[in-house]
Each structure stands twice: as structure tokens, then as C-alpha cells.
Image 1 (cartoon, protein in one colour):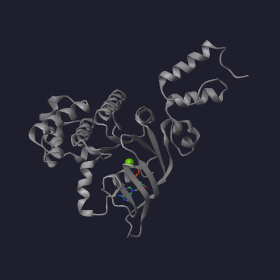
Image 2: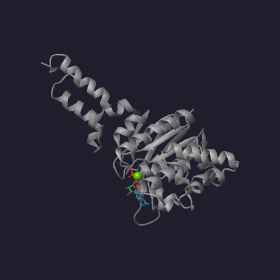
Image 3: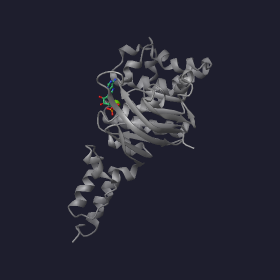
Image 4: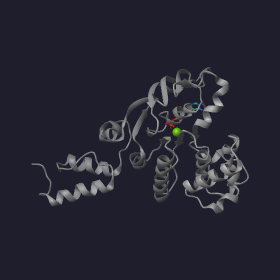
Length: 289
Ligand SMILES: Nc1ncnc2c1ncn2[C@@H]1O[C@H](COP(=O)(O)OP(=O)(O)O)[C@@H](O)[C@H]1O
Ligand SMILES: [Mg+2]
């Protein structure tokens, strides 16, 4: 059975006004336990609107969301319980921070779950380590932190609740390449330890390739493609047609292949790309006749 099932979901902002805006049209997707799902799509394609439905922050204009087979809107009074199961880190999480120390901010979620003080402390420490911040930051005021640090604190706060599903809306935006790489590595470790489900929205194709089992491509409020990562990026032409990129190394392989060199087109890591190029030298120059 699917963990998250979305059926015929449509969402219209400002529905009862003179300027309604359809952000999602008839979305049907299934997400399974223990998967890592990447979501890509150009700005305005509906990614943030979609993920805010996963934990009941937005209510579908029509259609339904089922978690473990249960309609999350069947009893609207219970919608808060969904937020402990599905943790969402917003696109601009720095605005989610409000306590006077980083420690209290990360502990806020676990406190609301009525956990004991030792368990809360363990979770705060574990989460701060996971996002790659030093322990010395715990006593600071969140308002003394940089934008990137605030974002990591917000992510740690959601991780500390250990939700079954963690949804991250552009978590690496604004991070430098090394921090981004570390963050993705830590997220993979967290996933294999917690055996949870992760949904990550990102503009960075390298991150998406590195971490996702399957990729959902949004285009104009609709699902353009939803498939295994390898199959999505082998379809580079479709991605580029709707204004999306493929990883840089994949683009180089497409170019070489179009020029007639015998290289694979489904290459997604620099390591595999280097191997393909070295193979050209090992052979006869690699040009097709
Ligand atoms: N609060 C809002 N009111 C009206 N329209 C909105 C609102 N938030 C988003 N939209 C519109 O809905 C569409 C989808 O937005 P969004 O889900 O933020 O896309 P993405 O995250 O892919 O950039 C866009 O056209 C956007 O302008
Ligand atoms: Mg967005």
C-alpha cells in the first residue's frame, strides 16, 4: 500500500475572488515507504503548493490525500496529528524560528510531543549534528545566526520530531557547494538510519540525482513525469523542452554523443563521466564512423 496517495488533487488560490489562480490540476501520485522522492520544476510550477498538502497545511480545492490509506481531511480536527507524521520544512524556513535560543527552538517540536527531558535532549543533539552545526550554537539566539545557519536550525527542528515523512522545500538553496554536498550526505545517513521517507524539492539537479530514488517533474501545476531518477534524466530532451536542466556532466555526455562520440547518455556523476571520456582515449578516439 502507498504511504502517501494523492488522488485527483486540484488547488486554486483565492478561489472566491475575482482573481482565482489554479496552482495544481488533477495530481495523482503514490509515494511508498522508505523512498526518497525528488521534486523538480520551474518556479511557479506548483512544487511548494503541492508539498504543503502533504501535511495538511493546505486543503485541496478538490481531490484527496491519503496517508496509510486514511483520508487526512476526513476529520479536520485531527489534522494537527498529521504534522507529527509528516514534517515540513518550508522554502524559507528562517521565518519559522521564534524561540530565544537555538536549543529551545529545536526542542519545541519534541516538547509538544510530550517526550521526556532526556529524550528531548538526545534528539536536539542528534539533529544539530545531522545538519552539521557545532554544539556551541545551541545557546545562541537564533537571531544572531546567518541565513544558512537559521535554515539548518529549522531543518534540525523538524528532524528532531522524527516524522515518518520529512518534506524539505529547497533546503540547499543559498548554501555553498561544499555545505550542499555535506547536507545531502548527512541526509542520506539520516534516511538510512531512520528508515523514513524523504521528499526533497530542489533546483539543483546534482543534488536530486545524488539522493532521489524517483523524481517528480512538475510543469504548470501538472505532473509532467514521475519515474526512476535514471529514467527521468535520460529523458533530457523533455526536461530541456520545459525549461529544466540536467546535471552538467550529463549535458557534456549528450553533447559528445551528438557529435558522434561513443559515450553513454545516461551518465549522472562526474566519476562515471570521467570513466566514459577515458574510455574514448583507450579506444580509437571513439568517433562513430
Ligand atoms: N498565496 C498565493 N496566492 C496566489 N497565488 C499563489 C500563492 N502562492 C503561490 N501562488 C501561485 O501558484 C503557483 C504555484 O506556486 P508555487 O507552488 O509557489 O510554485 P513553486 O514552488 O514551484 O515555485 C504560482 O503561479 C504562484 O504564483
Ligand atoms: Mg517553491
